[in-house]
Length: 140
Image (cartoon, rainbow, N blue to C red; front, side, top):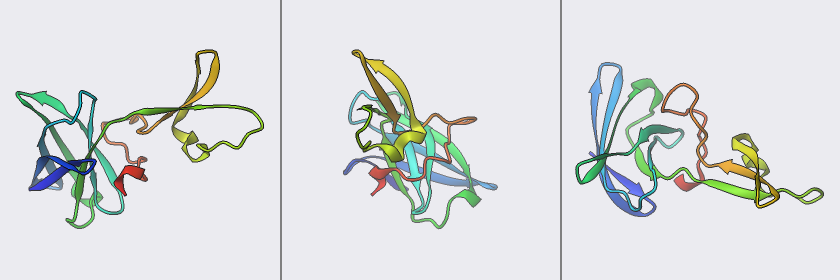
């Protein structure tokens, strides 16, 4: 049994069972706000998206499976993260502070100004798990 954290608060727990070549994760938690939250597991080197918390009675749950070979060791941490986007104004001739985040971004016109919308969690391509989302600053 592992604890699930959102920020510094413990908001639930994850029960893990081994099913053949997979780990099955079942999380039960409470959400700190009305935002949508995703459950992430970290093995210290990689982060894996286990899915979106869905209502189940008076709490929220996530059930997911990952191949055993994807997770290293058993010193894992679990976090709830709310995918939010950041809007950064774009001006020519000025240094751009968000250059490292351009991979997960798109342009949008907001109130007549060109803005770069930076997603904190890019959309997965073929599944609920996004292997490219490796360096989330909130894991530190």
